[in-house]
Each structure stands twice: as C-alpha cells, then as structure tokens.
Length: 193
Image (cartoon, rainbow, N blue to C red; front, top):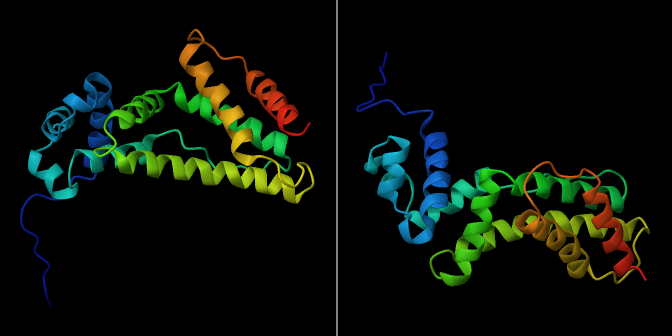
C-alpha cells in the first residue's frame, strides 16, 4: 500500500477567485502604469510566489482575469437575426456597466498606448466577441433574413458601437430595456437598404 504524501501547504481553492478580484480592483485604481503582481498579491492576500509560479507576468494575469470576468457575450440563437442582435446588445449593455466591463474598456484603451504590453488582451477579447457576433450574421444570411453580401463588420459595429457609446456617455442609472431593440432596428435598416 502506497501513501501519497504531499509537501507544503495544500492548494488554496479560493486563490484564483481572490486573485481575479484583486486584478480588477488594482487595475481599475491604477491602470497599466501602477498595475503590478506585487500590488495584486497584497490585495488578494496571497504570497507573491503564488502569483509568480502561476502567471508569466502582469499582462498574462490581466488577460486571464478579463477572460474569466469580462462581459463576453454568451452564444445566442433566438431563431431570428433581430432577436440575436438585440440579445447581444443587452448582454453587452449589462456586461459593460459592471466592474469587469469597465475594467475591460479601460484595458482596451490602454492597449492602444501599450500595444507591446497588452497585445494578448485585444486579440483574446476581440476574437471571442467577433466570432460570436459574426455567427449571428452568418445565420441571418443563411435563413434569408439578411441579403447575401450584408456588410457584417458594419452591422456589428453599428450595434456594438452604439452600445459602447451609450455605456460611456449616457447618464448612469437604470437602462431602458427597449434601447437594444431600437439600436438593432436602426442598424438593420441601415445595412439592408
């Protein structure tokens, strides 16, 4: 009979949640310039060695935390392109108004200034969103709801750009649930004329 003996402390099952929380808090407060693994370790109440052994650096840690917590749309198929786009808009509205969404927006802006440091961030987050959104348009064309040759990028930019602008510039507070429908209707009219 062999006995499995482990050395050291047992693995902390709550560590990643605490670290991801700390990443969002520290990044929101300090931005890229003040964001360090040491600051995250202090905020998460974990040893620095725990971070350095799991993540290759602050960019990798930020990207992972945002992948886990960011408002990526959940794949949706309501049966209609209008319903799918409206649900996508609602998910983004909800997601961007939370802490993780605001941190994602800040990180995306800072990635423009620090492209070498945050290259993985924009690639990871944008590719996930784009694939989900492009699938909505592909299905709409396949079902005959959108004409062949519909400008996919333009349609998605009209919807997501309006949502982003609304989050950034509209007064905070309760969002009008009909806003997503209005935006989608306007975007569909613009690309199907």
